[in-house]
Length: 353
Image (cartoon, rainbow, N blue to C red; front, side, top):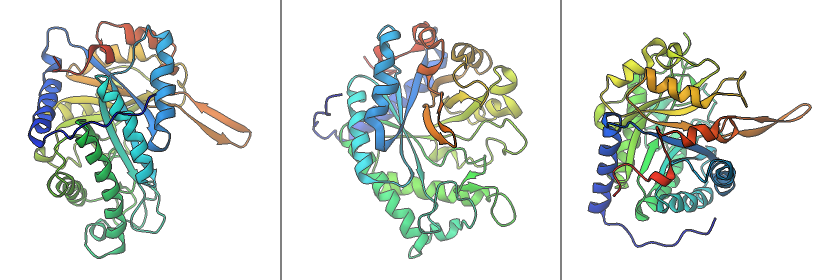
């Protein structure tokens, strides 16, 4: 991929209008006569964004009649938030935007309550300390936020609108920002709300980032361990889009609206997306994405976007194992991309002329 070309700064007013225009277009998608679903693909973490784009977006297009996913997702960091990695990832995202694509960003900073904390270190979390100026936890948290805000501001200056999906899967209990291992059990929803609102205020008020569409994305409630999807909803004034992450080996209504996951999120009256989609452990490499998308639209008709997660390799005692999750690793990816219901990169962003 060629390096991104430097662009003049976009005016605050025009970018704010562009952000609101895209949000309005997303809201209107399910009501159009021909409901076309935005196809998305996460390409991995910021430290290998260029490789991920080639692997999951560019290379598969040869067998997909030249089609590419419209929405590209990146993780600004897992455990460590590095400014250099974010800057490299932004070059990929800016170039995709210039091609007419859409961009979504998530983050997985390490637990700030301990030095070298990891994103899945869920014990010993004190969210009040994280939000209290002068504490070590707050200093670590703000250091990560400064790097994240600088990265998002670079996208703002390039005119890129971001579906910003922070602090996700908060109802699952496996990330530090909302754990089932806090003293007394689950994280208090009021404390999670305070964390979300602190992040929102810092990015939108202090850093003046008007290019963000805020996405609240719990995990689909597929079992009794996960809390209901709206438990940690921080308020309609700080959320623009809702969705859920869902990994499943079973395709059908019993999954997409399990424990009212879809119904409860739609009731919040925001545009709805499947913010992560992938197979469970039994269907990796054989997941029927075409059937899954058809079932999603049949059972969750307000869905305006589906984003597939990326594949990865992991080390095992007897060598490496490839975990096939990406759309391009499913046997029917071509059918998904060619379907009349799919909105791909060649179709451009919703609301674009």
